[in-house]
Image (spheres, rainbow, N blue to C red):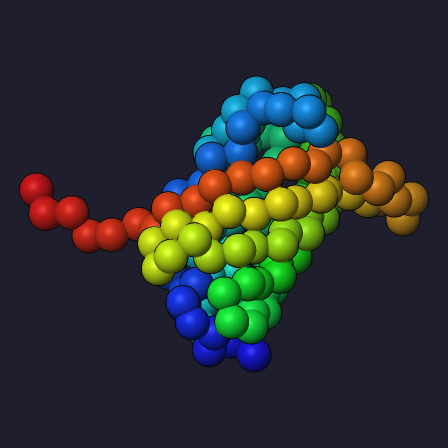
Length: 131
């Protein structure tokens, strides 16, 4: 179901704070939810080690589930696998949501390391601002 209210379709500015479960420094992301159930994500982490992500979402009422994947690379630029994130999203109104997430690493061999990072994030809908 993709027509849940409040609608998640649009682009969101997301902050993922450093906290227990997320050893990385706080980072930002832009998530774009398309009406057909697809999504794209790009974040402020080093683009040499993680590619922009693609994913799918579904929703009901004011909660949504999202799964996305991104290719990951070592410091020499060699493809090492991918990261797969699962998010449970709760709308906090039409222009804000919070999410809890877990992320797994999937090696090129197929070996999965579950829950390498986990935590919470908060997002705000992007709106047109006139100059």
